[in-house]
Structures are given as structure tokens and as C-alpha cells.
Length: 78
Image (cartoon, rainbow, N blue to C red; front, side, top):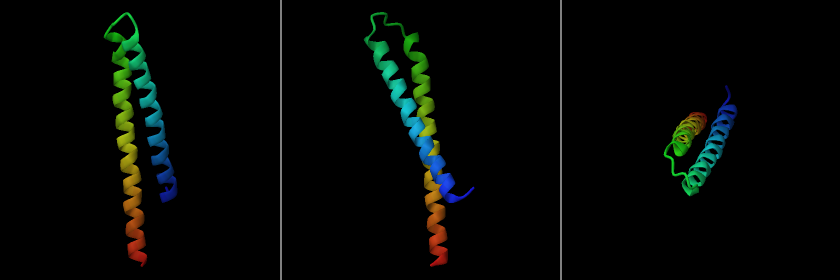
């Protein structure tokens, strides 16, 4: 896998994680505004929010690793 492909995968992962986090946050907010007040209404969105956070963190590590690798390659060539 080339560095550019890995970088694109990392950025795409961050974008997808952010979209999932926004969707989960919206679900949590609308559940709290509903009259039912049932805690089960927010359980699944909370789990999805945590999964989105993990996806963002993992993707950020991919981007960081690619950046470090590219820096090492540039330092080695210079």
C-alpha cells in the first residue's frame, strides 16, 4: 500500500467517523427531547458514538503513521 493510499484511507476513516458521531449525537439529542424519557432510547446511539470515536482515533493513528513514515523517507533521502 502506498503512502498516499494509506493517507487517503486514514482521512476517509476520520470523515466517516465524524459523520457517524454527528448522527449519533443527533439521535441522542432527539431522544432526550422526546417525552418518553426511556434510557433505552439513548443506549444504542451512545454505543455508536463510542464506536465512532474509536474509528476516528484509529484513523488518526494511520494518518500520523503515514506522516512519520513520509518524514523518515524525506530525512533519509535528504
